[in-house]
Length: 609
Ligand code: AGP
Image 1 (cartoon, rainbow, N blue to C red):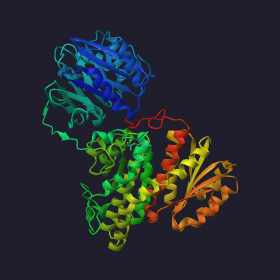
Image 2: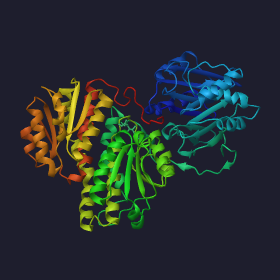
Image 3: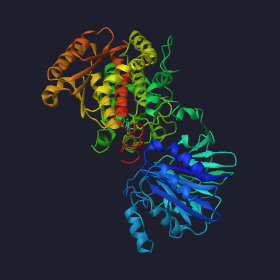
Image 4: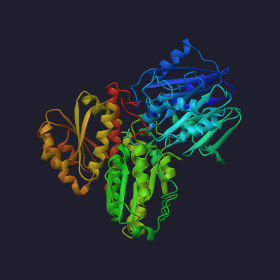
């Protein structure tokens, strides 16, 4: 998704904008640009491709000035090209705009603006904005912004500069993220906090339909209706280092290795040894509330959806409440049955995924109570849900989600246990047993990371294969889904996850000599059955790597490579068994020479539907 930065202060703007944009690269982009305001004149440089191309251009055409806006674009309307890149400007270059989001009524606006004489140069929806601002501008940029945004349908985060008001940047948002960094004699705007962290830890998290007016010494915030807003400063406590690679070759492997800590942090002060209470922050569901709930929807996209699949198993097992899990993009259009007895749990690492947010809103409009599990404080999902449980995974930069997934699992376990305790389906003894095992997960995750060589060898041996199969039953199938997604998205190997018992109903026809099969066999009750399924593929020539708990030595008899996971309760297995699958995807992608952290065609935060 697009990234926005803006700077106003005493320093040269270009290096600050470029550095800020580089911190937003994780969002995915295909072009980049800046607009610099200097001596009453706006100059724009922009181009298709990586930020490095823009830097090259700026070397041959240096832009002086200490006020500017910058943008990385992830194309939605109009192909990636120099002309479609942001910033976009009005005809005489007195107004320039960067935008993240989609202006849904841009065609209508474009027709109207064209009919009154405005000329369009690009295929973008964004270009209506500088023209609309030009139309309304009569010497008061703030007023023009208010008038212009009142005409917009859709989502936007905007950074705006105007050469007639040279000491100012205006920022406004609706349904796309935007923050303001408050410095000392300098101020910033950005799509995300890491972009401003080298300069300040004090930020304003803009809410929907809020406008910030930045001068170098001041930030004023208004609603889009013109009411002054007194906003509290949010002080960022996490370290700028934690948003950088810290010695690892890629963010993804760093984030895989951060999982023991992320798991521990997510459990800290929520479940504790020698304390039988579960403290889930702002989730205020009482026994009486739970009694009224007759259905739970777990809604998310991608990896978060896969965490939701595990969530369904564990809530049904521990709390005995029926759970439906669905992709947000399907749920919102299938006229789901929702009422005040419905509970929704939405999962989103970024908290900004457009489909997940829309599903959340649909739930709320129809009376459901919505719990959000998210990793980003102050994200849209967090702000709009009825209750929030944060995963404390720290910033996740690699497009492929890893630590967000395992911490989402832990969040799901805590919610399931809480519900099970509230409605009496989980006895104190059962709770203690699961809690104590959960608290050991960080050290067990660490032990798995120490076995990386086995996985690395398997990846090396099979990285040229075009297809892979992931098999498992029950919770192992849920993890297989995530393992297959991981390898597809970063190494571009076609992979399918199959419920092991379902294979023989068609897909086994695809198993041939040498095909890698990744088999998960962590579920005691299903172990023998999974062993039979492994034998079925082995007899057709598959090369099998199998994962089971220590002590289940039979697995070595039926597979080519056996990997033993430290023993835990079968219900908790997903937290551990996914880790080797993340490593397998990572090492396969590295062997294949793929851009691990920024896989093709993907964005970290999918803020359009
Ligand atoms: C995971 O590796 C993905 N890149 C993707 O599926 C992601 O999980 C999905 O887009 C949902 O994102 P969210 O958790 O930020 O809502």
